[in-house]
Length: 79
Length: 153
Image (cartoon, rainbow over all chains, first blue to last red; front, side):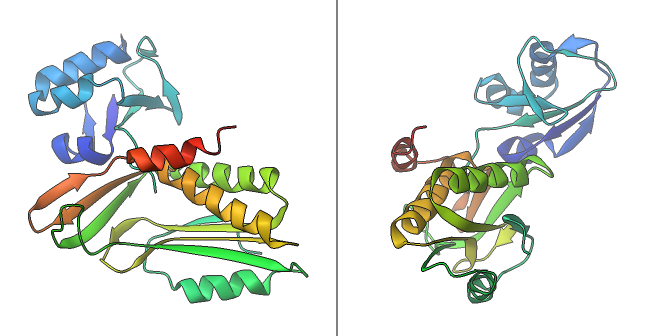
């Protein structure tokens, strides 16, 4: 599973990572990432950090398979 | 004809964008434009070294288009344009250019105002301000949110 991080999250854990994960839900993925990246755990736990798959924001129960590409967006700064 | 919206990886010249916008008009009586510049000082008065604008490869442009198209639908404007920087922006450099044209001035003023208020809260950017005393990721202010709420659809 490929994971992309934007904004502050990208600075904390890197812009892109490959993880062995799935099938799992978004919330399970968040918890797994928080375990392996404790610095990012508070940010990952915020519900203002949204998950996006195929350019669509998805909810916490969305099912991800091991081939998914997931993007995590912190709150927008705006322009 | 130039697209409604554009992301600019490098410094742009607002005068050139403005001139191009005027060139493609057809008889409108009113043109309003706005330029946002990277401020050289942080809110606490420190010196800014750079602004970094993070963006999404597809959704950022889409967020700009949605705002420009909404302005065209909502106001009696015949043309609008939004150009927004991405990447590193030095203090004093233009970050955003917005323009609107209409037969009479009220619609052009309102469309430009609307687009800027929406850009400040809804455009998909993550901005990091790098100052001598540290870096800070920016979130919209209460003032930005209040301005956005003026246009509640």
